[in-house]
Image (cartoon, rainbow, N blue to C red; front, side):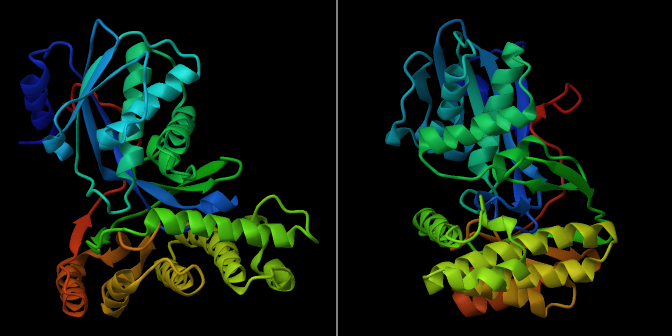
Length: 395
């Protein structure tokens, strides 16, 4: 049974037969090829939307209630709230993300008086760092936007969804996840300037290559607290640099300029954090140029340098991520491998020669399990389009 059939069946079970009224929506997950922890420092990122994602089946109601059910959290049952009284409730778990999106639309002055019945289902592994939270935010935002014909651009939907996560959920995330999910383009990565939101699409030719996401299957227990700690350390470094330099963000510096002024940063740890941010921003810009010239080996070298910087200067990798990346580097079919996402568990992103994909998964997985005692999961994914309503042909 495919995802649409599963959604349709679950909808009928939970909310009754509304077959004629149902509309279907999709928002992808995302993976960042390179450019980690640069987004909240005014730098560049280079993500792409995936063919994995979150689906939603929706029907309008005649009252102000919203009822939501998730195939991925079926044990939680139906979550319900009133459009005129939206509040964060810890007991609502996953449902707080779509609730926050409804809240932001209303806060922005858009009139929503009739509720929805919604069933969600996705094939993004939960907790893997592929942005399942932003995916459910965007699929909800597109649903609201299309049903009400608000005409909100996808870029603004991304900002509304980010605000939901920042203000309603209380997670101080950057814009990369929501933006790349909202504006993803098939067979293209996106170079995004997270300060200005200027962006350009960059063709990613996958002929003979596979994009492989390897999940450490280590729960990312420290990710939230350490993420906030890293943001604070970057801010401290920026404040020290501002004693002599007029700077809005760390990523305004080139690596050479940083080396010249690094002595201004009083704390050694904060200096290391800033060094990663500045050099990672330069690696990201270089990667786009290499991709344009089809220099995949050079991209692989940048990915390795990125991982090592995240390990040594930003200190967000950990034993499992390092082991998985190092195992990948040993395999002859690997073009590049690095951790992706916040770190402290989660996934690596790997570019692998398609002909050697099976042995890559087998050998890398074997080394990882031998050293960690954990079995990794591997997903091959295409680069897909952004958040949208599905056409009749797609359902």
